[in-house]
Structures are given as C-alpha cells and as structure tokens.
Length: 245
Image (cartoon, rainbow, N blue to C red; front, side, top):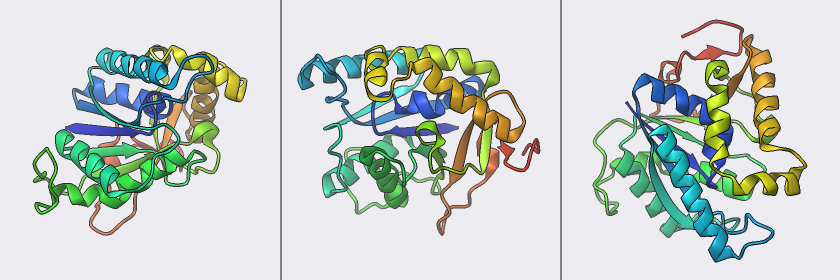
C-alpha cells in the first residue's frame, strides 16, 4: 500500500497525523511526505533563505526517521495560492506516490496554507490519472485514492468521524516531530505552548472521544467517484465508541 501525506508546512504531517503515519509504517506501507511550502517565515531570528534551508533539512530528517520519501514543493510559506502552477505540482506529487490512500489538511483549517492545501488536493485528486494533464511524472493507472482530512490545530472546528489509536506510538510521534527543532521556539512564540503539549492534549482529547488513551481524528472526503472505506486507516475506530473496522 502506498500512502501519500500532504502537509502545508514542514511539520504539519508529523503534528496532526504523525501517529497514523507511524502505524502505517508498522504495517509495511510505503510512505510519501509531500510538503507544499518551504516554511520560510517560521523564525524570529533567521532570514527567509536561512530558515527555509533549516526546515527542509529538518523535514528530510523526519522523513528518514520514519522511512518516508520526501516530496518538497517549495512554495513560499503563508502565500500558497490555487494556481495552474500549484495544481501541476500537486498532481505531479500524486503521480510520484501513486497512492492508495491520501491524507491532507482540512479544507476549513484556520491557516490559509492548510486550507488551500486541502482544497487543491481534494479538487485535483482525480486529475492524477488524466493523460492530457502533463507533468514530469506519468499519469497514475489506479482508481482514485481514498482521501481523509487530518485534524486541525487543537481540533478547532473539526468533528472527526474516524479515529486511529496512537497510544503505543505516541512517544515515537514526539520524537518524529522533534526533528523539527527550529519550531519549538516558534510554537512558544505563536501559541505559548511547548510542542509536546501541543501533541499530547489533542491526542488525549481525541482518545477520550473514542474510548482509548490517545488517538488521531479524520474525516473522509465525500465526493462522487471516491468509494471511501475506513478499512484503509490502521485499526480504524468510529466515533460511536470502540467499534473497529
């Protein structure tokens, strides 16, 4: 199974679905981490050029730790827009990964880069198989992948329908995000939170909702042509309690 994760920024995947990525890795899935922007405004002390280099290096280290292939799109942080250029870049990433499952930010997230990333993924997923859309990588031949939206920061405005328990991989998730060392200070500057707390509080909250110690929440994309199945999430739990797929 190929699983493609989209993040708007270099630490988004690790923050909001890193536990699920670790669960997929334990299953033997082939992972791809596609990062849309270069994180070049994520510092109070380094220049845009300097922090972009740091964040790409951190993203590569995190991807190496989990065994994922990093796809780096390199668009400017906080200025991602829906354009012909960005659509082609996203479609090319989909073709490189040839995924069975795609996980992306929610279309209604607070950050414009997050929401636009989710929007472009949701709008363009079927285009990866269209031959007359030309990109560097060739069109995919699989059916349209299953698409799940990841949780938002602090779960604000997001009601999960599906959950993945991450209790036994949570410490590894903390280590995975820890490769983005430059962002711990940045998180404290923006939100007055340590990164560990930023991970633990939502994980325990989502776990409480579904009856396990720690979990990550997801919603499927309901669109024609996408026969979503919760069986594509590791040991999927539903919001109704402890029913497993």
